[in-house]
Image 1 (cartoon, rainbow, N blue to C red):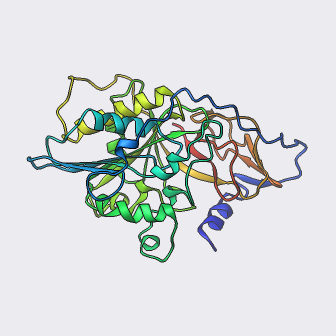
Image 2 (image 1 turned 90 degrees about the vertical axis):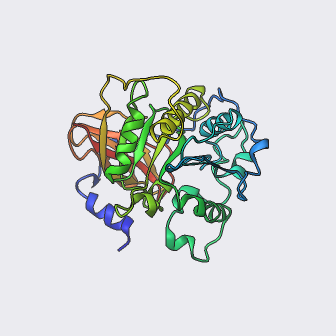
Image 3 (image 1 turned 180 degrees about the horizontal axis):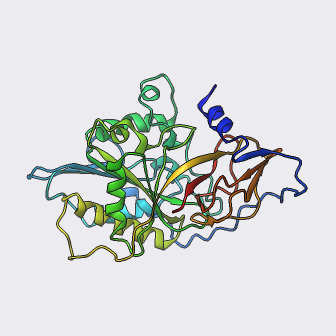
Length: 344
């Protein structure tokens, strides 16, 4: 039985209910008309890199310290993080201690970005953020994204702390994603604490389709001290997402001791919220449709509340105070439609 089948079978009768409901599924939501408030940055001068890997920049200080890395453009249409990296490079930010790597991961997909069809440049061949499996990386599997994973892996294999910059398609408040290790969650908490208001921190085990960069064994294993977290900076193509991405980059570099603090800052007084995902709901059919347009971070108070229809099954909340994490209102079959977390 596949991992996806096991996950689905454990949800049967708890989240997934096969029923002849009198409630008809609503029509699938059309894609909205997205506003491109943040134009794509000009990255032409950063194509070559400076360390033998296109799009990758590496700098070393004379004083010892950790190797830290910031990655952006895992997906070609998520360029708020690329705006932040370009700013750091233009400002000639250099490590005062240790080593610093700044990596544009998928410049080829970014080069295809079209404001008239902004969702179609996510990748060239396949989702790069599902390929970070050592066995897959050493296999005969090939694609443009796989080649890029293999190209940047030697850099990442020496990284002590990683910040991976993303944004979201559907409207949602910013959040941090970390794996299930305390070391990575602690990094997310440290970064969130200085962002007013602190973004939600979500611990989860990743996707059935394949491991993310933050799930790469170097960062996900308790046998190493290396840690990583992912920032979802807000909605794609919005200036607020680029501003937050840059602020979190500065906080990250200061927290790791890579650069000296520009200003003496204190953590926000508002408490940082942290949740752990209990269930990943996959779209098992091409007819998955939400009961209404839910928003990420929304808390459903009542257990058994109808969330969605997936073919002949209903998807309902498994417990009270169920927090929805990044619902994908137009999921493809076999992909994650929503993550569920218990809100305390």
